[in-house]
Each structure stands twice: as C-alpha cells, then as structure tokens.
Length: 215
Ligand code: SAH
Image 1 (cartoon, rainbow, N blue to C red):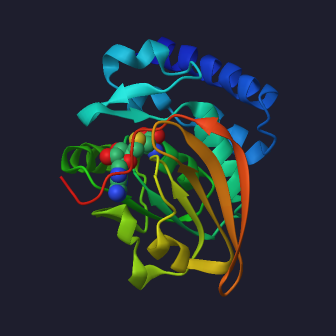
Image 2 (cartoon, rainbow, N blue to C red; image 1 turned 90 degrees about the vertical axis):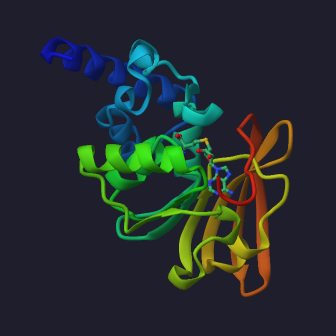
Image 3 (cartoon, rainbow, N blue to C red; image 1 turned 30 degrees about the vertical axis):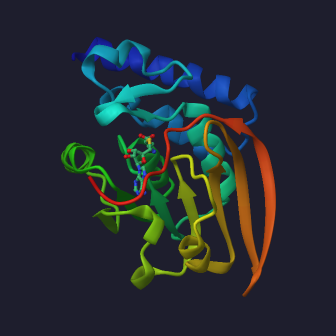
C-alpha cells in the first residue's frame, strides 16, 4: 500500500468521524482516535476498501470487527480519562483496543479464541500497541488479580450480566455490556456502592455471542 492509499484512507477517516459525530459521538478525543487509527489494517486486505464505512466486517473465526459507531459509543459510555484502568472482554481484531490505547488508558484485554489471539498479538507488535496485559482466556472470569477496574467494556453479546465482572468494578466504575441472546440491549451498569448498581440502556445492537471457555 503506497502513499496515495494512506492519503485516501486518511480522508475517509475524517469523513467517518463526521458521520459518527452526526450520530451522537460528541467526545472529541474519541473522534480524534477515529481519525487516527488505520482501521483498514485490522481487517483482511481484501476488505480494506470497506474499512471506513460505518459497518461491522468479518474477521477470523467467524467473528466481526464491530461497527465504528458501536466502538465509539461504547467508549463514550465508559467515560474514562487518561491513565484510568480498563478491562476489555473480546479483543478480536484489536481495533477497539487501539482506540482505548489512543485515549491513553491502562488496558487489560482478554480474547478466548487462540487464532485471533495470535493474529492480534502480531498486529499489536507491528503497530506498537502495548496493552498492560493481553490475555488468552475466558472473559467471564475477568482478571481478579488486576482488579478493581475503573471501566469494563464487553464487546460480545452476553445473555447475562457476568457476576465476576461486576465484582471487579471499582465503586464508581462502569461496565458497558450488550445484554441479550439474538439481539442485545447496550447497557451501562455503574457500581454506585459496594453492592449497589445503577443500570441505564442505550438501544438495540447485534453482536457475536460471548462464549464460555477458550478455543
Ligand atoms: N472488539 C472487537 C470485537 C470482536 S467480536 C473488534 O472490534 O474487533 C467479539 C470477540 O469476543 C471475538 O473475538 C470473540 O472471540 C470474543 N469472545 C467471545 N466470548 C469471549 C469470552 N468469553 N472471553 C473473551 N473473548 C470472548
């Protein structure tokens, strides 16, 4: 890919950021990360022409890279500043991770599929993206030893609210999770007290399912 392609993709990222702004993404730092992260490198080269459309695309192992609007919305709902500690469940292509990285958060991320874990590890090295921890494991367990987290972002559809994840949130921390089976309701759960949680919802989405165990 040459200089011209880079120029072309940069232009497309600016247009995508404007589109997301119109759809309700108001955080300039997030829009800035959309303008900077080369999403075309997170998909198969054959799909790079589609990388800056606001749509989900297939990645390895029948999974998907989430739609840019969904990534931006989940990030906005997290509402975290530089240096805060975030746990991501479902690293997938690593695009969401890269947005969190651009926002200078402390990232812990878990992927259950070994092929994706391997491919994305290589991509992170190539792009010099260094999460605090990138773990091959089952996100339902979270990362107890590294908890509590200021934020938890789940990027696969979960039929239930995983109890272990709730217990790894700081008081005041927020979990953004799509809840449901066939379709999911984007949900923000804030831990307002030691055992007190507040729930808010943000519309319907369609994610690949959050599965148990590794493969
Ligand atoms: N944020 C990613 C989304 C990928 S799709 C991106 O934009 O590319 C969801 C991902 O969650 C898939 O990679 C899938 O393998 C992973 N996943 C599903 N269940 C999981 C679990 N229990 N723990 C960790 N990862 C899981």
